[in-house]
Length: 281
Image (cartoon, rainbow, N blue to C red; front, side, top):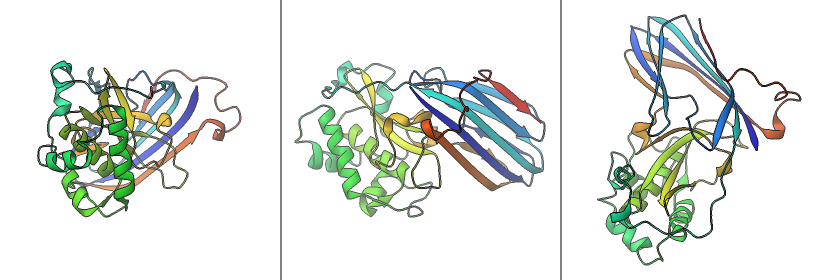
C-alpha cells in the first residue's frame, strides 16, 4: 500500500459573472481510495457536485461573481495498484464490449483514421498483444522530445507526430492514436503523481484495452506509473480538462504539491480524518 498527499490551489480573477466546471477531485476507481478529502472554496457560494458512473470522473460546478475566486483541494490517498501480466492479448474488434467500443473511434486530438498508414508501417508487422503496445510506448519515448511550451491546447496527435515534440498529454494522445489505428481501444488518463523535478503538474498517460482489462502506459517515463492517482478518464484531453470556464476569467495562481510515502511528515498518516470534508466560505 502506498500513500500520497495532494494539495492543489487554483486562484482566478473573475472580471464578470462566470460559470466554472472543475475536474480536480480524485476519481472513483479501484486502484485507490481517499482516506481524507477537503475542498475549500472562497468566497462562499453554492457548489454542485456530480460524477460520471461509467468513468468514475467527479466534477464541481459553481457560479462565481466578479472578484477573486480561490479553490483549494486537499486529499490523502491510499493506492492499491494491481500487477500487470507480462503477456496479454489484443481483443478482436468483434469481441470488444459495447462500452469500450467508443475508444476505438477517432476523436478531436487523436486522428487514428488519418494516422492509420503510419501506425501500420511502424507497428503493423509486430506480434499483437501487450508487447506491441510496449513498442508504441518505447517508440514515442525515443522519437518525441519532451519540450514544455512547444505545443498548445489545440495540438493534435498528428501534429506531434510531424513536429516530434510535445508534453505528456501529447505523448499520450499519440499513443492512443497509434493504438486505435491498430484496432486496439485506448483512452486518456489524467492524474496526480510526484515528480522528482518540479514544478508539479497534472500528468497524462494512456490506457489500452488488452485481454479484457485496461492497462496503463506512460511514454514520458517521468514518474512511476503505479503511483498515479487518477483524476479523469476520457477519449482525449477534451474530456478531462481540470477547469472549463464560461466567462471573463484570468488565472492568477496554480500551485500543486504532491508528497509520497516516506516523504510525508512524521505522524501525518497516524489519525485518519473523515472521508470527506467540504468547506465553502
